[in-house]
Image (cartoon, rainbow, N blue to C red; front, side, top):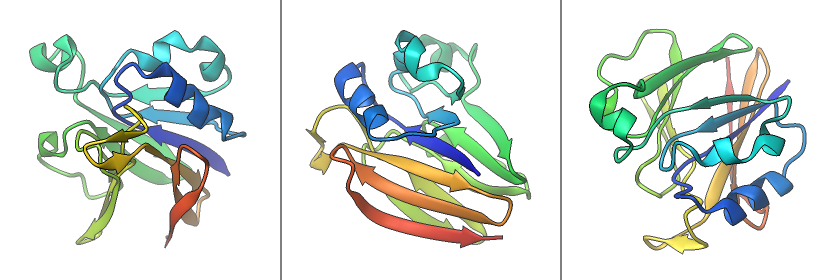
Length: 165
């Protein structure tokens, strides 16, 4: 099993970012969905023995000038994911993509359209932002199952969804 922490819209709030990591053990991968692209780079201790995949947010120079890819594709345990900050950047979705992770809205979301799950972990900008509390997502991946756990900063799971292959 692989355990992935998915965060978005941290906006340089290192305290909330670190608090989310204090809540979790056994994380093997980190997906950061932008705003702020460099937030994980300041946390070498959190990156140790973990794979980091990140995309820039709309206001990052690399996003605007195209020097940093706006979309990343990741495969883990036979499941393929796409990562983007802004969901509208995704034009053509390859047939083997199961989940699209995105940020930007500061609102968590889990929605299935056709055979693709669109998932937003929320934000870690402040305890509350745009009327939404700070949230992140833990995804446990096995070859047969995706186990999504949406959590608030107090480590309370408020939504759990399971997807079987």
